[in-house]
Length: 223
Image (cartoon, rainbow, N blue to C red; front, top):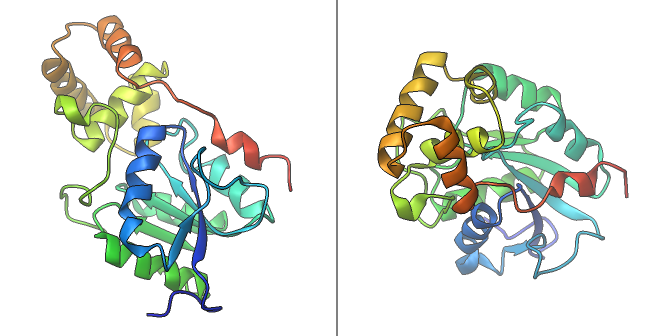
């Protein structure tokens, strides 16, 4: 597939409040720099100019799949918006499309398929990945707690707890059942060797589970 409709690399802004998450996504594109230019990580290009795609990573976003996608879609500095997620609940896909997302892509996609999907979106297609069977995230992705043995979903649950979300709020944000959330929490407690929510929050604060930045704020007030 061609690198873009113009022959130039696609400019992609990565949007999430966790540096470690975005760095992992950016590293997936390392072998495709002739096709994808990451224009969002703090040390790279600024967001003052227009980007071709805002890639919204839904990891532990407190307003996940609600207002933030609309904010990105309404901002003229992002030509298109793509959601990058493991959660393929039909209501989330429908909501994202209604709010203006041109793509809804799975974190199980290998880098070459992710790049190809972004190129298709850039060319004007609407791309929605097939709902994945539960599998490991694509090689190269990262998240808080990964080195301590937490899966991406377990890490997201802990991140939301660290942000002060209740079990009911976590369930609503992730579209998981309350019992599933409780099961994840029990597993997280066991893996990080804590016995209470307070201890889990303290562990999260000390291990990178508080948001590093609020990148979405950059997009709220127009160009």
